[in-house]
Length: 282
Length: 259
Image 1: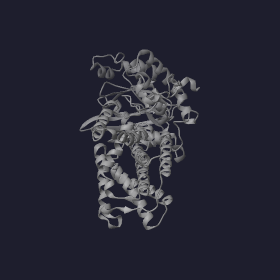
Image 2: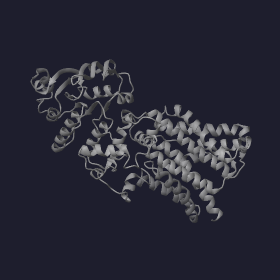
Image 3: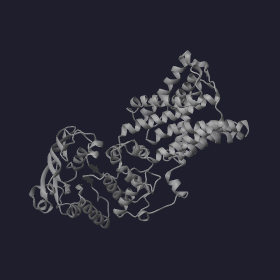
Image 4: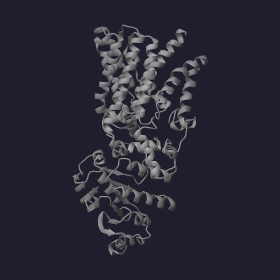
């Protein structure tokens, strides 16, 4: 495999994990536009733990995941007091606070960034992406996942069915943050360098687009969305600088023709998931 | 204990911006009973449902379910106490399948982290899914349980809502216009199904405008008008009651024909 494609695969693996982090929250009906902030927390946690404490990636990456999940848990309480567009703004503002703190702390390297010890190679990234995918598929099939999807559709009725809405929303926000932190930790060790500028508003917007274009109805969505967004711009390179125009046009077209995302449940049913009637189950 | 009171409403009152929508309403639902809650449009029937299920807090009065005061409990705890309801406008989860909607109705019965983290959507042989599919079949719904509900016809969705409410195995089922929009054959079938439910011990409180349906399903009725209880008794007596007649005559209709 050429270095070029290895590089793309590494980014793809990280993007898939990151996208699942945003998806888990979005599946419960909450839009997190602060993804880059959570990824930055994971990346810097791994960097600091590796550099200051000399921990190996086998420890720093799980620790980065846990730290980010805990931050997500704590942030969920004020953030979930807001609704709709205000929640989007609250998460967006949170990401700005994170990068702001990093830029002003000399211990975190400020604008110079931090060098991260211990390189993590491509197979580990791919393994982590596969594990994350399986984890989210499993989560969405559980009763907790069902409660999350129900909250996405109708919060009041979910509550009247006995779903503890706030607890499920906080859990989905914290789990999502943890996955974004995992993506950050892996990113830090693979690229051996972190800087606050990478975790920009644009990154938050992109990862939310991966999820919305992929579709939030099923766990296939982020996988398809992240792959689409990572691979298509590369394939469009042959078009020179027109690729940005073409790619933008593709996104607009997707929003027009598949507003619920590329992968929907109706689509999955159409491409051959076996149909069955209630009577057959008896 | 066939005569024991399951639900007791005492002096239930609720105002919205100075308008008393529910005004000092009291009545009882006995265990396993089938009670109709009727009245002209705007009489406060759905508000009574919203007060019982905890969508709104009450202004005054008391609600007792199975001997327990529930008026200040959050909606979820009222479900755990044995209450389930359907909605006037279908409020199924449009992105979930029929069987997933029913499994959502089971949520109150699934407690603990183990129950939350067991996959239920993949396992056609799992106990929750089997039970939900059996319930759909019992209701006479011959559909693909994996079909997303937004793709199903109105009458079927209406019925799935009743099945979803039943999935929590409630002691009391609140049904808000379950027959609205159904054709006569569907209405008759729903009436049969509801009477069958009541024989298993679940009490029914039914809001409905179709008086033929109420007559089929309910033993007794409570009549509301302008938020006040104006009658409680049998359907036959309600027809003869002058206050009830007057309330309905306001709409130029005999209660027997009001739809």
